[in-house]
Every structure is written in structure tokens, then in C-alpha cells.
Length: 596
Image 1: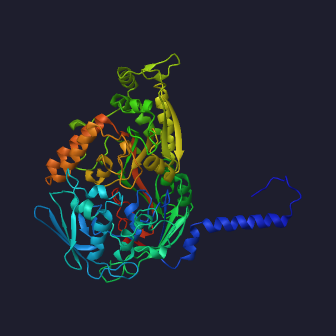
Image 2: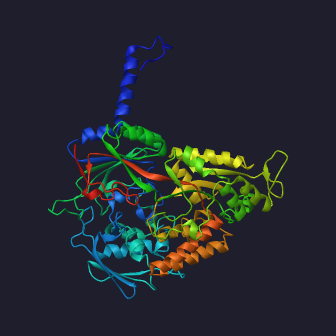
């Protein structure tokens, strides 16, 4: 590196010191060092765009977490076949028209601290945590059954068997109530669910933060956390007590060490992968053409899972409620605009999604029109009533004028009272494509006379504004794929759901909210979700979820944009990869092997 000669009096020795410090700093942060340090053991170096917000799975709402590494499920969904398979439970029996389910745990299960895992842990996890009204767990929404929102009854039959009983048939029970709940250790956490802290809240709510000593965090999955450096990485080592063994009786997983890098930029992740510091990479649209040229030479493969299972959209804040100080979450003037269906539809018609796909996504994406995964049997095609909003500025303009908006002498869109239509679009900074999308949205709406200001935050700050402060106008975001059954999104679509962010209802344990109300169409979607879960006949279930999609595409609480193709680059030395969009590259991590 050549330095400009502006400090001729600096001694050469000082320059050497500076260079040595720089080299040491770069070396310390380089993930490649983990490969050298642990060259004798099979390992995987992967990355996430954000750091964990908690080490307590019952309280987690972030997309970035450690839980897939340190916990297993009672029942697992095979993402290749979409069938349910045994996990911590070796079997299950469903009787009484689906209203009684008995699961039988595997014999000899242990927690990562060597203590036995039994039916007591399962019963504790449900009754003391997820069904506890004093614990605001995001998982609670998926446990609510029927219109009354009744919860299942969970009881121990013996050390290995647990009985679930539900008040009525509930089609998604095994897939989302049994498969979707993380079992936690009673011997570690039970006391915290029975004891209050100085703030009057259960101690459990402050258990297992990201500042907790990792030795205190106990799991039942393939790995345990060995170290955590905030904003840098989490390192996992193999759990010696994990239950899986191969056909020859050899313990699984075969990969002994996971290095989970926190790299909060798709650009920086691309650089790390190309330099050999990462073993896999979610291929962002802007990096695809470059990586495709290097595929053979650099010895990796780009897997294509087709359209991603997630959703990407903008949503307006439809809340008319006030916070604990009596202040409205949304400016009442803006709230009147946002709550007009015609306004939301006009915005949808104004957005040029084809250009967005070409520019922001480099053509590597698909236009999205529904919250339901396009490959799901419950997806409503346009020919059956799904409303599609292709780019049509004239239609957008007509809708706005019919809704009482007009243009002033400066050609700015104003409402009937002369207020300029201007709002802030919130998004997160980690994905470059989000910034590109936001910039185009601002341009497209400027053509309609609407002023859009951008607010781009780090993911955790963005999530805090959405979920806690709730004082936002419009946000550009997405939800990760939840599978083929629409019930996975019940916490988003049920109007009391914890992720019903476009009109967030008061939540247990949250700040006081007054004046909250749900629109009639929200209530109807809620009713359809209930009916869809009560019906066990798949064809009849389809009709309920079809109707919900017809309403959602008319009312547009989510204005769908473009979803990326599910592309992942994985080093060739990993053997046994069975890639799918539903499961990604490492859903079967326990059986993957590394060849050097």
C-alpha cells in the first residue's frame, strides 16, 4: 500500500507498527483463520445478514437466529417430500377425529448438558411457556384453535409419552403445533417461569439473552454454542449428546464445527464467499452473473430452487390506535389516506414491477401476487379470482381522483383538504436489493405526484420501529417462507396475531394501546383462517384459503412486489446436499459430509 508523502517526519518504525496492527486486526476478523485453526476437523463457515436478538427461542421474532443449530423438533417436515417425519418423537398416533394426539419420545434422549430429556420437558414447554398468558411468545398464535382461540390440553402419560387433546378438529396441528414449537429444558428454566423479577414480570422474560453465559444455554439439537462475539460471529461445536446416529451407529452430525459469521451486507457476503471465506452464499441478484462465471473454477455449485418461499412487499400502517401517551401511531391525516382501499390500489398500479425485476433483481426474480407460496396447493391462481396489479399509471391516477385526491398548481398530489400526499418508506439496510427497490418506488410514486422519503435502518432497529414503537408510515419488507400450508402465516393474518404489523393489536406483555380496531375485511380473513384450520378435507380447505386470497388481493394490506429466485452457492466439498427452496442447502445438516 502506498502512502502519500505528507508527513515526512514520521519515523519508519511507526509506519511498521501501524501496518502490523492493521494486519493483526484484519487477520483476527478473517473467517479463513478458523479453517486453519480447525483444519483437522470438518467444519462449515456460513453467514447471516443480522445478529441474533435473543438466545431464548420462545421469545424470538427475528429472522436471524441460532435455533436451527441447537434445537431439534418433535416432528420434522421433509422439505423434499413435504411429509412429516420423526424427530425427537419416534412416533405419533392420531385418534378421535384428530382431537387426540399422543407422541412418543425416543428412548434415551438427553439435553446438551447430559441430563435426560423426558415427557416432563414437553409438558413444561407447552403449559409453562407457550400456553402461559404471561409470556408473549410469537408461537402462541399458531396454538390457538377455532373461533374461541382455545388452546390444547397437554399432559404426561409416562416418561416418554405426551397426550395432546384439542376441542375440535384442527388440520395443521401436527405440522405447526407439534413441529413448530421448540422444546425447552424444565430443569433449567422452570424456576424462571414461576418467579417474578423486581419489575413484576416473570424472570423467564429476561432469561437467555445474548449476554448470557453460553454454558447456561442448553439445547437438544446437533450443536451447542461455543462462543459468541456480538456483530461478528457465533461458533458452534457438535453436541455429544445428540440423538442421531447413522446406519452403522456412528454419531451424527459428521461436521464437527459451525462458524456462523455475522456479515450485515449482501455485498460484503459476496466478497467473503469469492475470497473463500464462506462455504455457502444466498446468491443476491446483483451477484449472480459474476458467480456463475466462477462456478467451475472456484469449485462450487449454484442451486436453483425456483421462486423463493418468502414474500416481498410494501405495507401501509393501517392502525388508528394510540400509544400509552395517547399519541396516534400514525398522523391522522395520513391514516385517512392509508385506510382508503383505492389509495392502496392506486399505489399498486403505479409501481412498475417489471422494471423493478429487470433493474433491482437483474431479471432474476418473479412478480409476486399472493402471500401464499406459488407452489403450494393452496395458492389461488389469477384465473380463479386473484387480483393482479400490473403497471397502469392511468388506472392509478383515476382511482386517486375518484377517491377525492387532486393535483395542486405544482402538480403535487393533495387530498381534499389540500394536504400534500407525502410519507416515509421504511426498510432495512442489509440487502442491497431493498435499497434499489426503495429508490424505484420513490421514482414511480413521484410520477404520480407523491413525495416519498426514505428511512433505511439496520435490521434490529427496523424491527424495533415496526414492532415496538409502531410509529411508521409504510415499510418495504418481507417474511421468510413458512411452508406450503397457509396456516404458517396465522400470526400475520389473524387480527390479534403478534405479526399483524399493518394493524398491530394490543399484545400481552406489551405497551398499552388504546383505540385499536379491526376492519370488517380483517375480521373476515380471520374467520376464513379459523375455518381453514378446522376443515380436514384438503379440497374444502382450499376454498377457505382461496377466498382469503381474493379478499387480500382486493384490500391490499400487502402490496406484493418481486420475489427473488431461490439461488444458493455451495462449495463442492459438501457431500449429501439435497437442495430445495423450502429447506435450503443444509436442512439435512446432520448427514452432510466434508471432503477436503
